[in-house]
Length: 304
Image (cartoon, rainbow, N blue to C red; front, side):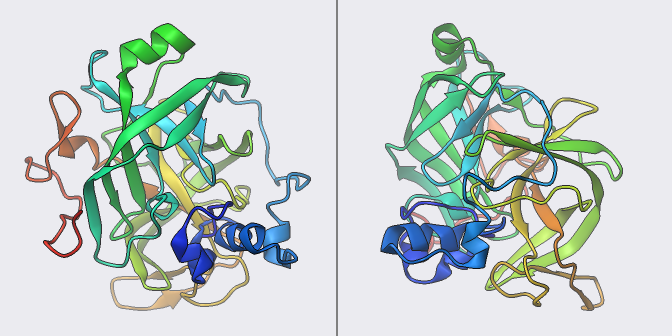
């Protein structure tokens, strides 16, 4: 999960840097913060690095964070007058990586995001007023509420939000992983699904496995995964097994129903997002008690 690139995460400075789901993410954040010489892993996130697969897909609706990628998203039933939402990884949260089992809701935030147009140019700046939801348990996601509605954003920037699909990703479908941070697109297909994906202290359920063409790198954490058949967001990019280790930071492993572990060096993964819309009601309000909502719920200890 090596994705955050800049030293905005306390966890990175403490050594959790390894967790950024693409090559050289969190570690890169630590190196840039400390001035240390980049390692082989962090070198992979240098601007001169050339991804294995780059295409001319549209960047409209994607965003660049200070340390990650993300996207301006809407639920299938969101209205133009609803406050906008930005989605990125849980491990891209500015206050640090949530611990296993921790769920954060309704946390104040003033984070800003660079909104991109179709050609990866800057369309404008978006600002958050709170973290609606963030966790690294079962999935790896942060959702920010913005200070403007979708209508206001589109009026000032000409950019409409991407729509989160409410259906499960489909094996074999062609996908684009669109990184607002690097302004690069990785194109491949859904190879299959990992019953459980483990990395360090974190475990994610039913993760999307990429075919080998999507060699995601640091800074692509939080990139929307676009299903080319529907044009909708089907998952959120978050990790890759960098060196063939088993279940360690930057080296996720797959665990099946019987507990058998499979290691796939060089293979990237994303977390499904189809379950998120069921947890949002009228006005883009989070309701973790809504029918069909399966996102992890906060405890008195983990919630903020």
